[in-house]
Structures are given as C-alpha cells and as structure tokens.
Amino acid sequence: FFRQNITPILQRNDREKVFVLISDALRYEVASELAEVIEKELRGDLDLKPQFGVLPSITRLGMAALLPGKTLELIPGVNNVLRDGLNTQGAEARAQVLHKNSGVEATALSATDLLAMTSEKGREAIKPYRLIYIYHDAIDTIGDKPASERMVLDACDTAIQELLKLVKRLCNSLNATHVLITADHGFLYQRRAIAEADKLPLPKADDVLESKRRMV
Image 1 (cartoon, rainbow, N blue to C red):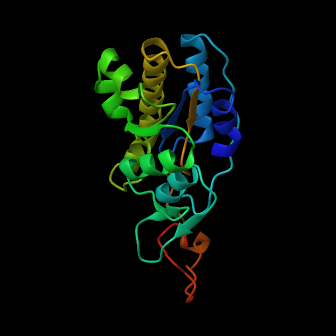
Image 2 (image 1 turned 60 degrees about the vertical axis):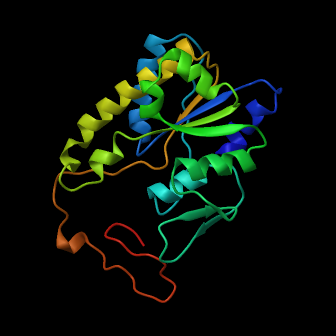
C-alpha cells in the first residue's frame, strides 16, 4: 500500500503533504458509496480502486501492513504485530514507524481528535509533517461486538458521514491536496445463524500461532 500509493507523491518534491485516512472495516462497497458522496460535495479528482488485504483480516495485522516497511511479524501469545521489528500497537507506536520508515516527517492522529480541533489548531498540529495518518473507527467498533453487530449497516452510514466531514475539514480548512482513504480490513455480514453442517472445525497443530472463532 505505502510503496504504490504514497511514495510516488512524496518523491515528487520536498513539499507535498499526504493525508491517509484509515477507517476500520471500511469494505469496498461502503467506500464506493462514500466516493459518490464526496464527488457531489467537493471538487477535485477522485479515483476508487481495490486493494488486496492481508489474511487473517484482523485489525492489528491490517493496520501494520498499511505502514511503510518490508516485513510483518506476528508474535505468538502477544497482541502485537511488528513492522520491520517495530511495535505497531496504538497510534503513538505507528507514528514512530512512520517517522522511521517513511523518509519524511510523519505523525498519526485520531479522527476524533482532529475533528475536535479548531481550524487554527488543526493547521498547527499538522504543520511540521508531510505525512499524516488519521485513524477512524465507526464500523468495526459496532460490528465486531455480538451485542451490537446488528447495527453494522447503520454504522456504515455513520462512517460515510464522518469521513465526508473529515475530508471536508482536510481540504477546506487544512489545505490538503492529497487524501487517501483506505481500511485495515473489510467485513462479512449475514443475519441468519450458520448451520452446524456449514461450520468447519478449527485445526489444532503445533504451528498454529493463534486460533479464534473466525480465523486461524
């Protein structure tokens, strides 16, 4: 992701800024609807294309894969993924990976924090940096919990509206010219219970690092 989409922009000159919005579990079809909304609300060139994800499609692995670097390492028994041997758990750790591996001044922010800032504070927060990763979570925070997973389609609508608001803030108030929107993973969804005959037993072997209800 980084090498194909971000590096070419950063290498054009020493002034270009790139904003990367990562929305947890924003699957392609939701992004397609978001693209239509953005096109109606803002002027500019818009391009929508698929991006291969990683397996298993879990947040901590997908988030690490979106950072610059060459290797990914899953540590058995540890809730963390290393990118070139560096910790990627949390925005602060990811900002360190960006700073070290991107070749430019970089930082990471939460979407909530950015939206809470005034335009002046927002400009000050991004001023020293050429690369800004912004983390957004509307879909996964609802859809990944059994108690609220039935609300995931409503969460998709919420994500579209929040991301539109973010893009407007970036372009209209923070003078952004390059905004990339992507996701750490998508999601599968159905309301019917899965029949026992359709379930597969999870494999058990010495080389299984981690096993959960939906993935190995």
